Image (cartoon, rainbow, N blue to C red; front, side, top):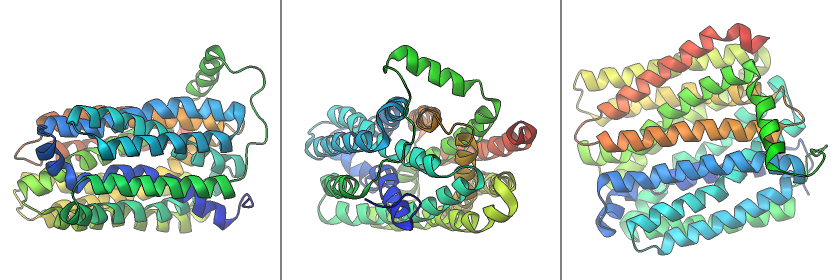
Length: 395
């Protein structure tokens, strides 16, 4: 077992957290091919993204309280088994409707890894130190959205769309084996008494009345909706509107994702000196600038995809500052309910992102405005919430 607080444990938690972006980004270059192979419309194919997000949200609301009662390690292992089963089902499905359904199951499993990785961090650290750890994990995990679309583009070109899901099955087996062998139990004090729905409701209620938690949650949710406007619409916009091939899309998308790794790397270096709030504020400004820049590029009719990708790189760099600090700030008041707080945080983010992805999918066509407009609005909203709630969050 790895020692709590070691860099090796950070690497393992980053591996588990990487399930999310790998599951979402690797198959993006295949979306047009999936629609053609399974006879699905653009809106139906977009529903495979929304279904995953809804499953991710539903899973997160369950795992936290369960892990607060029974421990982090057994719940993570169960989640990875479910994720593997869902990934196998995705690889062999024969209809767009079935793919949408089994993506939900895949997400139910994947949600556990991310929720509980955050909870493990809170078990070990708090405050600024937790923000640094989450930033460090983010900079490592950022390799997933950088590499995943490029790998997916190559797999799509050489083997077809099912190959991405087969690779996810292999990744799930590796992650489960590593967690079973190396992951320690970090929960120091389990929730007493029998586990029940009334107990869960009481735990969630105790988190929801915390004004600082709600303020951080607002920043996180706005940032996430902007991100998934891009995730859900990038493939259609860059391949359909700008005419990129699957391989070119994967490489271009990876360039944008590089911004998140840069942001988290810088945040990990400065947060111990300037604190959670100021680091978050710097990121919120950068994030808003990226969203406005993308809307400006579309409004001015700039025809190169470079403008869109450059603006998204800026947005994601700001998000690399914002997300880890907002997560750490939201979790810090709950040392005894870190799993519950992490679940609630993930549920709100993913639910709103799923609704946004489904809505944007209905409007996607020959314009980038559904993506650019949402990105600009959410970047500005996150900045406004940060500015308006500084006193509440500090208190």
